[in-house]
Amino acid sequence: MPHRGRPWVHLVLFLATIATTTFWGAIHYEGFVSDFEATSPGPLVLWHGLWYSVTILGILGAHELGHYYTCRYYRVDASLPYFLPAPFLTGTLGAVIRIRQPISTKPILFDIGVAGPIAGFVVAVPTLFLGLSLSHVLPLPEDFVGYSLGEPLLFRLAAWIIWGTAPEGYSLNLHPMALAAWFGLLVTALNLFPIGQLDGGHIAYAMFGQRSTLVTMVAAAAVILLTFYSLSWIAWAVLTVFMLLKFGPRHPRTLDHHIPLDRTRMLVAIGALVMFVLCFTPAPIELTDIIGQ
View 1: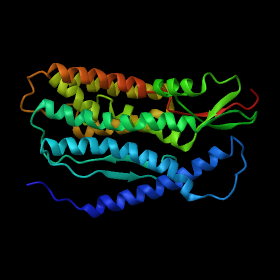
View 2 (view 1 turned 180 degrees about the vertical axis):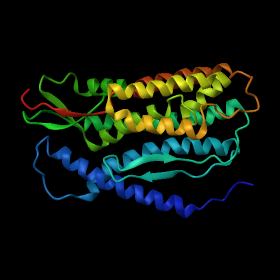
View 3 (view 1 turned 90 degrees about the horizontal axis):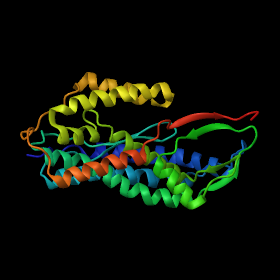
View 4 (view 1 turned 90 degrees about the vertical axis):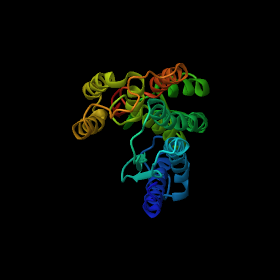
């Protein structure tokens, strides 16, 4: 019998995440309208934060509901999404669902694993283009100090289509909707890492069976090596090591672990790899200091 769960927990976490993402969204909007100036344009107006909040919750919600409704389709017992509020920049740590029973076959595991990233990506792409169209290309002040966001391939392509190539000394001032879409692309890439119980780990096991353990170890090593390229990977590397220590590198077996996926799902897996490449950036967040340049 499916577990009934505690709906009030999901509701409280969701409302808390609306609050934190709206608050930080209002701060991001204030930064956007200041046009790289250090002075505040005026008092903080919370409803301005909805540009960011609605977008990021839409992307994360679509991702988790993709998993959830695929579980429902296959009669796999799963919880509603748990949204995770956070008291810093993003306003959220993402969202998760809890699958409460073993998954019997690799096709079912694959479909559940890949449904989330696809659903989130479908929402992230149009919001990225809309958010970038609301952004501005502006000259950077000579004394500008701030954060620089790494640009995934899809982000670069969309920015080029809308704005072309920015002149020397100019930068794209991101509208909060575009910032939320950027974060959605990053979350998609992180989830597609072929590690353990991540979506990419499920996909890798469904494709390679027990050989996916080697894929997991190589991917985990890659995450650790990325910390030497950008310190912004440290938190993800620590979480990766924690997951491997807690759950081990081997993915739980399905009953049909020796049977390969069908051709259609293998093609979808290639599509998921393309999606990862489009959403990945080697240096997600860097401190920019151009004083004196």
